[in-house]
Image 1 (cartoon, helix red, strand yellow):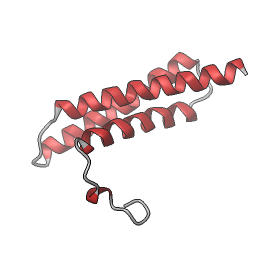
Image 2: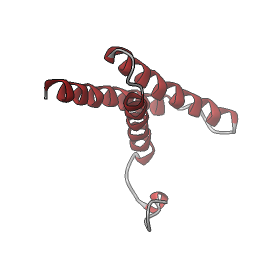
Image 3: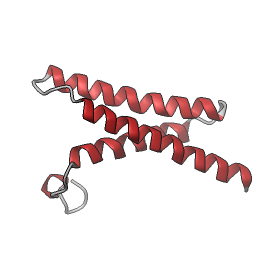
Length: 98
């Protein structure tokens, strides 16, 4: 629940995939913003890997609790992690060129 609006009440096609994409992007970026003492390419790799591992573990959890392992969710996680890497690259470029 965000404020007074419940996410479940919003009717958006492919809402699950959009949430997977956004959460993976935010996971990737959040880890990238906290790890500062290693080279930038390693920060990007760590952020990408972190988002993908969390997405895969979520699908494994779903499959073990009666749901199904959804490859489309993994694809949405992948695109979200890639978007997070691009966003972090843009931030690194902006900070170093200023």
